[in-house]
Length: 342
Image (cartoon, rainbow, N blue to C red; front, top):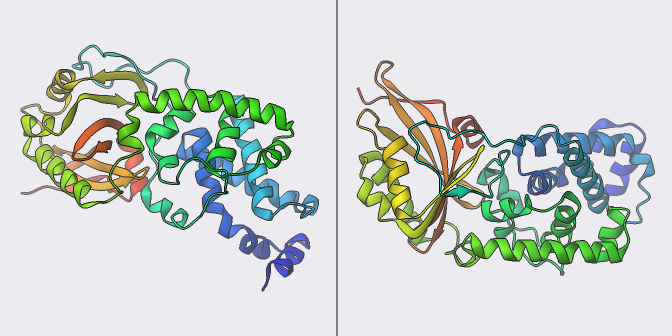
């Protein structure tokens, strides 16, 4: 059944035809919402509301633009509405996750609501070519550094930058999508680019923009080294993988720990304790290596999900580590427990 026939049937009230019509766009729309909102759960909610709105208003689709562009317009404005509501986002940073943690180096940029995005959900984006005006490659535009930088922007600037520099829409198209003037779009884009360009180098743009190709031999070796060091509780081997100004952050705590010595203190305080041992399961998040860590429960004879670590690399060194609560691990297909060795 061709698109025109699906459209006719969907407009006549055929839910199945509507599903067939939009299924090819649903995943990329979820990623779009994730970029703007920074939360996988919020992106899922925004996607569902987008599809519901599209179904209700399909009769208003005039086909002056493509269906994809029309859906992006709905999704973008749904995200902006969610950001305006803002009630779901904590304004006060959470306390450090463990009282044994040392004093932080400072307040970091990672927002409390940030969540990692499973790479397995990005497979359908690999072959999608952005528009001719895009500035960022798909892999860079999903990295944690880029998603974090986006969250620093006001909502309208965030949407404009994603539509223009990630998806490659023309200024005139973005103006139509946002019910704005081209001049206001260009002005918002200029301010947004300045913020992003200033932020990314501070997070190590040489590592985030010019890192080895994802899943390269160098990355595979680094993953093996890190997994081995964590499971053997070899602190020296682990610290030896870090660059001098390595950074740690652990949402929802908006705190940052920076530098080799601070890294050593943090790891001694919360990870390399005499009464703790771990198993590590490598995975991937946001186009980067990630690790599901499981801590031994000696009373139950198993390992329980402890944290998900996402790392940014430069060559064979780690520049940034972001630790997430174990609640995100099921999204990566990681179990809540692993069997013990006994």
